[in-house]
Image (cartoon, rainbow, N blue to C red):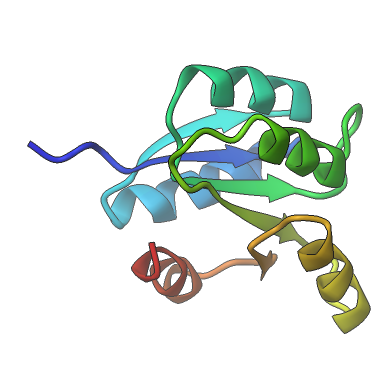
Length: 121
């Protein structure tokens, strides 16, 4: 039996979490949700996620700080961390990639963008 593909969606807005979760589930993923960076770190310590969609602008820990902490605690299995954000300017994307994100997924997302994303994993 194959290991389930586990994803974590981190966003302080419930609607954004629900949409991403629904799209990932349609692609066959088991999805967990967190509403802040600290909750994401707690869940990541408990589950072997392959994919994390991480909002950038959240109260408490920012997406960048959460990404840095996830990278510092990363296990042997590769973790694909995606900046899940409305910040779409090219300089924002370059900055996010430089601070440890694997790619940037700009809101609003679509089924096709999620399918393209998970096809690489």
